Structure formats: structure tokens, C-alpha cells
Image (cartoon, rainbow, N blue to C red; front, side, top):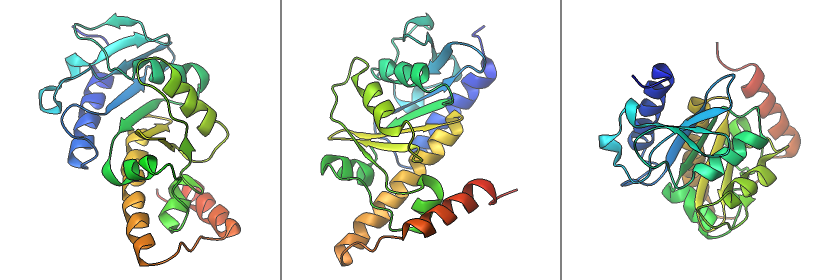
Length: 217
């Protein structure tokens, strides 16, 4: 029997959430989850259709990206995820998508300006642009960490590539990816109607504090 069955099931379900929220196509994108209290994480295998993914397919890796358990090859982004986990111990989940609107901002090499209260709530300001990096080693991970360390945003637009999000859990990282695409779409439409109208910084701070510390049950 595969180890960590509950985390595997949650991770399998979260990959399906990427599909239902229209954040991925074909086999692109991935979610990973840190194993609490251990130097390990689970990640999607490379090049497997979402409709064929199950809990048992998730690949267990150490924080250097070495495979510890699994019959399939891990995601091509494994080194990037591993780098994030090594350098950001507060992160419990990492997500990567090529969602259309957010990736368009990445292709244009532009951060998404904070022009919506939903952005202030979730991201605490602009969604930043990260550097261009080649897939396959930890270059993307280094770009994610350099951009997001000390930043309130859980999302980064990697230049000419797509979206990476982080969270205290894999579910939180998926939520950030969903929200990133939603505000990217709204911002794209808004800027076709006229120039950007930014929210003042003090209002952003107040909205962020309310949403992060007061909102919800």
C-alpha cells in the first residue's frame, strides 16, 4: 500500500480542481504537497492525463527532488517545487498552471496591478512578475523564492511561462491559483475599457488585514 493515503487522496482531488476551474489543459500543470513534519513532498507524475490520475500515482520525493516512492517519473517541475520547500519552510503546497489570462500577463512581462478589492484581499497588492527561467532544474524555484520571499502575494507570474502559487497547504495554493486567474481575467477586461485605477496602498493594507484576519468563520 502507498504511504500517506490521506494526503495522496487530497492531492488527487486538488488536481481535479485545476481541471474544474479551467486552469489547465491536457497534461500541463501540477500540484505538490509537503508531508507535515518530514523532509518529503508528493507531486503529480509527468505527462499523465488528469482523467487518469489517482492517489496511488502521486510521486513521493525528498527535498532534493529525488524519488522515494512511485512507479512513474515525477513532474518536470519537481526541482522547482523542491527548491521552494527547501527555502520556504512555511510553504505546505505549490501549484503551477498555464491558465490563460494570468499567463497572458506573464507573456507580456507585466505584473497584474492591484485594481480590485479581491486582489487586495488575497494578494495584498500587485501580483508580481518573476524572471524568465528554463524548465528542468531549480532555476524556476530560485525565481519563485527570490520574487515571493517577503512578499504578501502567494502568486508569481513567471515571465513568458505561467503561474506558480504557494500556500500553507496544497489547498491554499490551489485557491491562490484560482483567484489569480480570476483577477487576471477581470484586470485584462478592465484595461481594455480604460487606464488602470489603482487602489490606494492604505486601503489595500486595510482590505488585506480584514480578509486575512477577520473574514470567515
